[in-house]
Image (cartoon, rainbow, N blue to C red; front, side, top):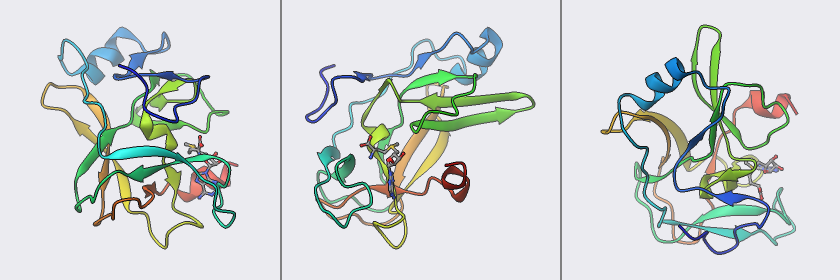
Length: 171
Ligand SMILES: C[S@@+](CC[C@H](N)C(=O)[O-])C[C@H]1O[C@@H](n2cnc3c(N)ncnc32)[C@H](O)[C@@H]1O
């Protein structure tokens, strides 16, 4: 699948998650939920843009924007990257997918991923986030991290989520 416009050269574009060697066969079977292949649709309701507004806290970086009007509670895209069980403390693109006992499963999109890696935190941009991460079992069985709208989003508006206070405190 070709990368979307504004995709950076140093990051591989993925259309489905890939597994890192730190994920055991048992954990992988749990995450797969019996599905034979992980499939996802190319996101069509979002677009990547460079941020040039000087009053934006991530000015000079990229963000994800609505390519059309989006209704509340719409599925926007799945967060795609490398599924791993090792520590990725240095990654700013790592999201927790599942925790159980000693096992922490994350999706890291620092070196490979999809449009989801460009979603900024709402702080300094919006009063509240307009989207959220939701972990879901897909009909085919696998555990996924979806991005869903939490209210109506106008065409051209930036998509923002909450990374959580802990994310910022850790930095
Ligand atoms: C998952 S990335 C988001 C995409 C990033 N803007 C880019 O161009 O690759 C997370 C990084 O974006 C920046 N960021 C996200 N939300 C921000 C915010 N509300 N204020 C300042 N920086 C933010 C920080 O540099 C953070 O480490």
